[in-house]
Structure formats: structure tokens, C-alpha cells
Image 1: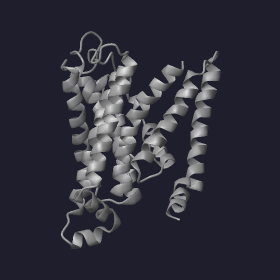
Image 2: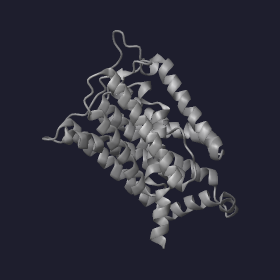
Image 3: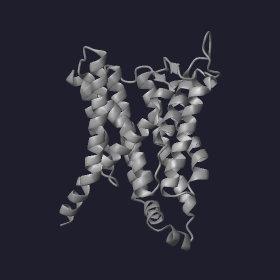
Image 4: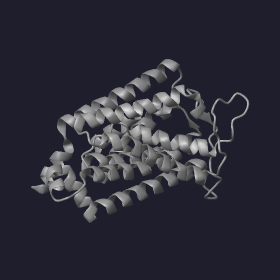
Amino acid sequence: MIAGLLTATVQFGALFAVMTVALNLQYARAGMINFGTVAYFAAGAYAYAIFTQDPPSGLDQYALGLGLSPFAGFIAAGIAAIVFALLTGWPTLRLRGEYLALTTFAFAEVLHSLLLNERSIGNGSVGLTNVERPADLMQGLGDNAQYALMATLLLIATVLLSRRLLTSPYGRLVDAVRDDEVAAEAVGRDVRRVRLEVFVLSALPIGFAGALYAMITTLVSPAMFTSEVTFFVWIALALGGERTILGAIVGTFALVFFQEVVRIVPFETVRGAQLAASLEEVVTGILFILVLRLRPWDRLKWRTAA
């Protein structure tokens, strides 16, 4: 049981930490509030499923299944997330603050509604089942251990990319755009282009994470990609402390560990399971309120500086 708990925590913790690190890049460094993070996650998962799914037959209602290899599906997931980021970022990134947040949230809801009601994309509310998994990549490791390792490698690559980006001269430009757009424009910088570049670059690992999520669950359906995923990532970022990659990762793993602990408890009745699920959401909400109220990471910074 303990081994399963730790494997699941690493598997999903690393997967969602990829999203948190990407969100940290968008929000803490580039100053963009994106409430539509789940949309890029869904775009990657659906792209992977469509590219690897067999062509429709029998009662299937989806229109396209290319039957390609998982590797092709993985690449398609990243491209799909980039394309969606370009389509949504180009018209929205001239907005600021809560206006950008509401617009990105609206785009995510539009995609969710499209996936739910347009059955030719992914079978509507039923979704695509039996999503293709790659053959054993590492002999001797179980499936869960393999996906935990793959998610960890994706997280490491995302962290390295993010650190490389932000410690370069380009990172200082991103900080300058966040701190004072007028001054950045005054010295000839294309602020809107910089914001769009960060938006698109951060969408790429989220798309890959979506593909990995589809491999792990072997299912993609609209119910898996609701706004709760976006709020989960935002809560993880707030818990870990914004502007630090390590904080984003620690916050995500803490939340995922808490969820997995609740899930491994054996409940004998449906009512007990429902109460546990409600308790999980209540405790998460209380933690979020406490962190925002007490701001422990700011206090820690002050003490370190002193």
C-alpha cells in the first residue's frame, strides 16, 4: 500500500508539477493571469488519443482515429497545445489582470463545451477509451513505475527549460516587461510579442503532460478536464510560494500526496467515499485560505533577508 501511495504521488505529482512550473513562468515571471491552463492540458491529451486511436468502428461516434504510434501522438500533443496557445494568446494577451484571467477562462470553457457536445471530436461525454500506451520501455519496471519515471523526466526537462530561459538575457527581458511595460516599450521592445512567446513556450510542456495523463489513465473525456484542474494548479502554486520553481513543485506534491492518502483509505459504503471526497475539498480550501492569509513564504523570505 505504501509503495503504491508513493508511486502514485510521484506519478501525478510530477505530472501536475509540470503544469505548476509552467504557470509559475506565466504568472510569477511574465505577470499573466491564466485561468485556462486546463485547456492546453486537454488539447494535449485529446491530440494524443486521436493520433493513436484506431479508426472508428461500430458504435463509435468520433470521426477521426489515425492509429499512429505513441511517439507520434506525443509530438502531436505538444503541437496541439502550442496551436491552441497561439489561437487563444494572440487575441487575449493585449488584456491585463482580471480581464485576461476571465478571457482565458472563457476560452477553456468553450473548448470543454466543444469536447462535450461535438461527438465527432472525441465521442462527446463518453470520451475515448482504451487509449494506446507505448510498449514496455524499461524491462523489469511495472507500468506505474515506468509512468512515474516518464513524468519525472518531463518535470526535470521543464524545470531545466524554465531555469535556462529565466537566467538568460531573455529572462531579464521577461522580468522587465512584467515590471514596467511602458519602459520596455520605450526602449523598443515588443511587449506583446514577448508575452505571446512566454505563453506559447509554457504551453508546450503542459501539452506533453496531457499526453502522459492520457497514457496513464487510458481515457480522455470532458469530465477529466474541468476548471477544477486549473484551480488545483493555482492552489498548488499559492501553497508552494510564487516565483520559485522549487516552491511550485513542493506545493504540487503536497496537494497530490494529500489526495492520494484520502484515496487509499478503504471505504465500505458509497456515503463514506462521498464524505471523504467532500472532506478533501474542504481541507484543500482551508489550506488555501490559510496560506493566502498568513503568507508563510513571505515571512520566510523576510527572516532569510534579515
